[in-house]
Image 1 (spheres, helix red, strand yellow):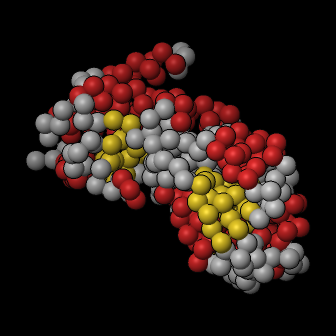
Image 2 (cartoon, rainbow, N blue to C red; image 1 turned 135 degrees about the horizontal axis):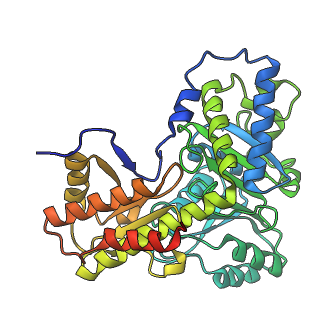
Length: 394
């Protein structure tokens, strides 16, 4: 017996649910890739990506996922043997650092904790030790989708500046761009990257990089550069070089529509929507945690992200919960990954998401907890409803 007929709900942190308008935008013939229309599509998207990153710097579009965009950032500003400092707060900065190691960098990890955010004071202490300025780049993520942590990128940028350290500050915004405030220039970030499949509501397959003037100056002498990722190659006069070949036309149609929708909503409104819905999720999890089995992975409330919540099950196997939600009710939860594999589930609340989607997901989880006799505090979904009722004005 199931109650899952109808559209399946994706509550995973990427790829996220795509708006019907974005799907429809792709349902059209390909463009002449040498046409003025194609050139204008690229030019407007690059300009608006820089607006999303909040930078006057140059943006680039790659036919790649986030892992490809990692490689694009590294190869354009590093030389083999350069020392890179990775700020750990979960799986993804570590993964970025592993890519740097494979490419020939000397990587050091500033050890962190999957249950807390990066501590700016620890970053400052390490940089002050580096009196010879051997560290050439610092890698951090704004939101780690494995741990669910939010890192205060503004505060980290401030301590780097106060130290007077010349390392490039590089930030992964895959799970935050378009969902949470990000100020590349204001916060002293030299290189930022993101992907299409989360807050930007577009199919997987596009990676984005933004570079400051300082990063582009370092780029001139970087010896990790390869033809596909190279910024200089992409700045040539021929339009096709901006994609190192044939443009991903239909993904660009999708991105154009998604960005239109995001800008029509207004970035500040999108940030507020994400904050309200994230807090609704957190209110529900806090109630469920009263049963002493479920709990937040991220210990400090102010370090929990507005795009994904990671819920640990304290010795209980989450597989049965995943299976019940998907097979019985049609809701797909994120699984625990990395160090949290088999210990947690994740609730995404990013991108094309609204109150009924979140409340429906929370209610299904509560149904599953009851059906599976998993101890939990009662009334989690009701707590989420109360929060939204108090916070969303008439």
